[in-house]
Length: 240
Image (cartoon, rainbow, N blue to C red; front, side):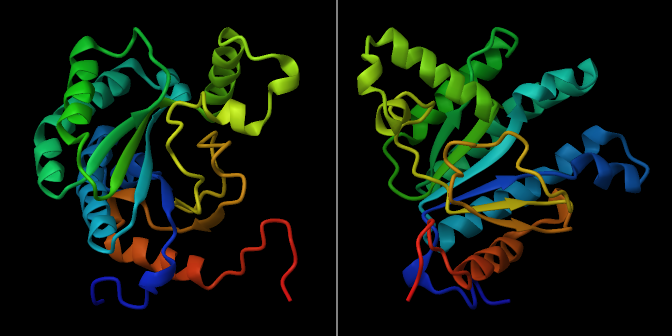
């Protein structure tokens, strides 16, 4: 497939979000530990990010670690923390050279090792001035937690009840600059949004694929964007 073949560059989605699901099943199908699936997913992630940058996508957000993932076996949680730290060390400069701006969205948590928080801060600072794709990693993220945290921040700001509206609440989300999600892609054949970007996905188009995340590549992203472009988005209104 040619780079982005079939995609209309004049009507790209502004913001694509991905639930990267299926790492564990990919590994188990090969008789490997679940952690090997997360490792294999790195190539999928980088190829997808680079493909998004190549076609001029503005925002790409991936679900890396949810607030519910703390319930996984401690060894897997430790692996994920170390893996994400290592990924940032290996890849942040590479993405910086591609003019990618790296951002993170999620709830601060003392359980996140200090060294991981340091790597996050370093990646954000390194790429802050970049003007290409904004690549956001949802880390220790939950959609309900984000809305609850935004409501609490709004109350602390002293806004009167009669002044509370959607715009006021949106200013207190984890990243107030983040646009609404136009397209959500979920891999591995599951048909759920799993508490991901609930506020931002109010009018998202949803694309579900049976492909397990470690097998996902930029061509799969391009196929999902083509499907998005073929849909009729009415935002609650009528056409014609």
